[in-house]
Length: 356
Ligand code: SAH
Ligand code: SF4
Image 1 (tube, rainbow, N blue to C red):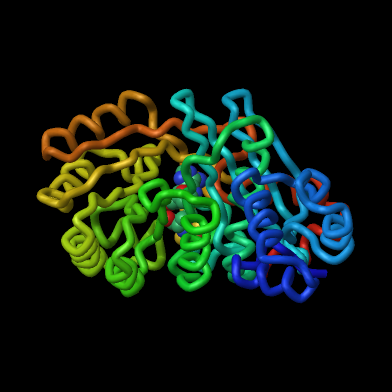
Image 2 (cartoon, rainbow, N blue to C red):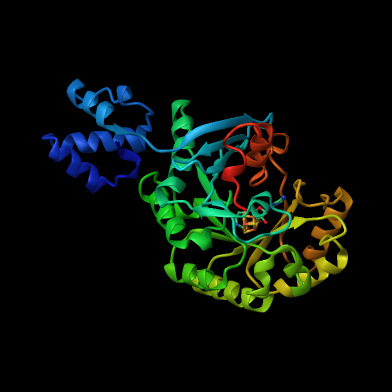
């Protein structure tokens, strides 16, 4: 069956022409899909009923199957989707008081980067998502929001997987978010663990899409212990690529720093971070660790977080403490999948979907 969500405008026009209908009908369908964002063909009220019936019989909208959904009291909605081959990915929608509606979407089933505190890293890698599978996660939230008169305003590629380990798929999805869902580049953020060649490639794309780097430590020894990829791309190379990006794009770069009590939250680490980033056009997002079953660390206490931020301030580096949204619904990357599979561990979907 034809999945219309995988069609671009030209492909849709071609299909409708083959069916003997005018281009005007293709325009209408496109408009229903991406402007009005309806979820059924029945909702395409200005189409002739014959065309609607044919669409219903021969096409479908999307390939993701909703496996589990949890809503947090803070308005965060987290979904677990089953892909056509039985893999699972998570997507989260965060609602903010200022009308921002931000979807956090996955780029891979699992992840090969093995960061020690990350639930996805603890699962290992299964496969890359296609650009359409990445795009559809945002599309489905956009559709639900449209049904209640709201619009998806931002998308972050910060769910399961490493976007730059699936560079082509991620970038094609980003282009669709801009062209089909009409999101501005500045409302899209790509987060990477620090794959240096792709950071440079991304800078060369000349897009205004935001870039976030998961830093988490300011010395090679500590960073390699938390993020194994640091052994391949150590801090000096990473920071050189970051400088290249800021110069080339003229844009500020964001650094993510997950604060782990007694690990990377000491005043010494803050000082080292301040020295490392001094002079760079950047911003640091400090996020207390979301505890996972595979890692024994704890989130930093409030006082330590504040000291950390204050020290960065002395170096002229702006830092923001991010609240962990949806903490009551396993909204940390990879955590819902881990919980759901544990809960259903008697069922066939459990272990065979987890990579060795
Ligand atoms: N692979 C990309 C994007 C997905 S991870 C990357 O690593 O940047 C998104 C962010 O969540 C990263 O900054 C990652 O380090 C962070 N993260 C992963 N597990 C976490 C946890 N248990 N607690 C807090 N942050 C976590
Ligand atoms: Fe992969 Fe990002 Fe998790 Fe590291 S933090 S294992 S790169 S998803």
